[in-house]
Image (cartoon, rainbow, N blue to C red; front, side, top):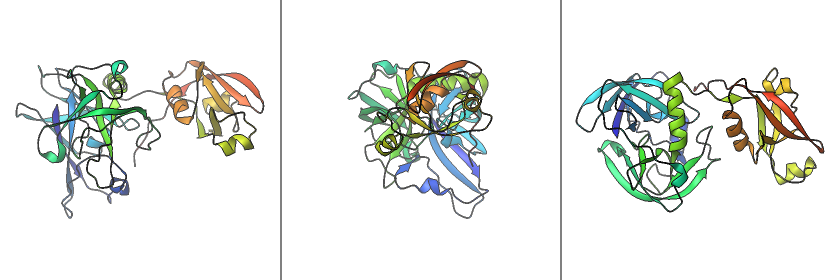
Length: 315
């Protein structure tokens, strides 16, 4: 577990999303007003003995300088190996060796009601551990990230905990603390962590490629409400309604049309647009996948050659 301190050159007005009263990334922005720099703090997890550190993207976003404070008192400069804004993860590297690295846990064994500990540096007071339980798994549709599959916990987490470890009672990493639900900016017993299964896979891609490579077909989808199901003559609201297809995209080339309803990808059921996004993103670019669609009143299978998802650029 490490503490992360960043310095950022101020080049534009404060992003209004940082003042959102409901969902806050708990990144401790401590701007001094008229200065040309702002300081921030967060937390991170040492994932290898040779200096790789996993944290949140929003902790280090646009940072001009990053320093990592170790538990033995050392403070070292850190470089960003790569980041993934769509999952809000980043990997840092410091010049150090023989570091105590975290042990990864297994999501398969995590259950609602399990006791978990949140470790971080809230408000910059130093390493702090709070205890709670897993209150839900697989939380999505929160509007925090593009790809959402959060662990929800009631362990107290506050500004500065972002990027810190959520561990089980055996000390194994089960999640990366990422966001809180709060009307005041403080902990109100609802926190969200990225599951270790997702964080580990994304971290390995970043270390290997400098970025995360995901599948993409170029469609815009929307949830099928009861009203939409009635107007389109659909038997139920299962699937993702294709609202738009990007010209020249893999979906366009395969013959997918607006008004189609995507029911399955390679035999895996699509219940809503979020699941559709996750299934397509998990596919490898250039591979072919079978898309089962409902068009008018018929069910059809269309082979689609998967493309590479464009890199998200934050404004």
